[in-house]
Amino acid sequence: MPSESASLSSILSSDFEKILASWLKAQAREGVKRTDLVSAKETEKQSRDFLIAFGRATRDAPTDDKFDFANPSWDPVREALEEITESRTQRGVSPTEMGWFIASIKLPLFEQMRVAFAENNARLLENVWNTTRVVDQLALHAVESLVQKREAIIERQRAEMTEVSAPVVKIWDRIVTVPLIGTLDSFRAQTVMENLLDAIVQWEAEIAIIDITGVSTVDTLVAQHLLKTAAAVKLMGAECVICGISPKIAQTIVNLGVDLPNVTTRIDLQSGLAYAFERLGVTTKG
Image (tube, rainbow, N blue to C red; front, side, top):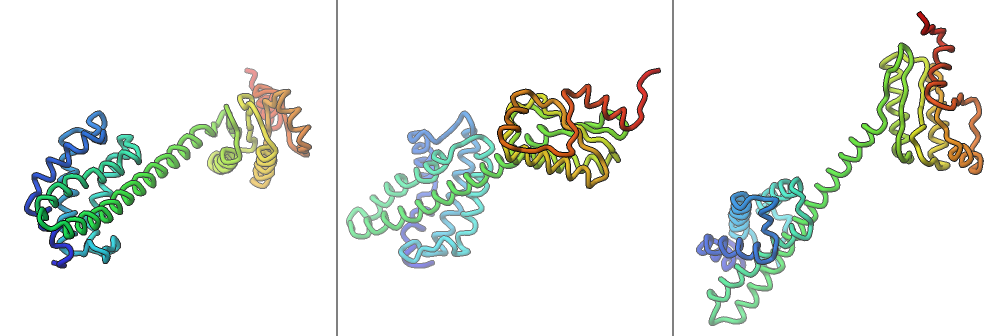
């Protein structure tokens, strides 16, 4: 056991239950014991598991100015923090609450240090300072971990929403359509292209209809994406029909100076479908 870690390590070992109980009270005091999101039983388990890993790390690694969180001895602590942040991210705990959840352990530790070094102010200050540095590092790691997990969830949800918001539907043999509603940005326009090209291959489509009746605005980049989509569809051996261009969007496209050469357009989905039937020689009458 490194001598510089002996004080914190011995305190965590000898006063474990007292520190745990005091920490749980501190969490409640600081408003980070979110019983509405995390049950009291789960909070106690997470706190206990973290304290156990913390105590073992301080036994095997220095906590003074030689403290290095990259030291393998701290791996179990990082793993405990990852598990806690994973659970709390799913529950909607904020980064601030996550940071204070870890930081609130300081006071219970300081209280035990005050007793242990009652007659040695120099040792007390030294241990308080070293412990502050260590706990702050752990709190920062917890916050960063939670933020990364939240960003990953947001990105996944965005991708899922984009996928749902750009569905390709087979409406007839050799005819597919993409009905679009809402705002059409560059990211979504790119997804439309990818989904449409995949659908052309899957269903051996010859006509691809992009229905933008429900799209409110189109900017230059989006207009260019639509042109690229039409060109990509043509390269796949199919024909692209853009229907549902509103008067407002038509004016916008003209004002932006975007040219739509060799792109078939129709006023609505019905006329677009009629055009597709005509091109394929489909007769719908009995």
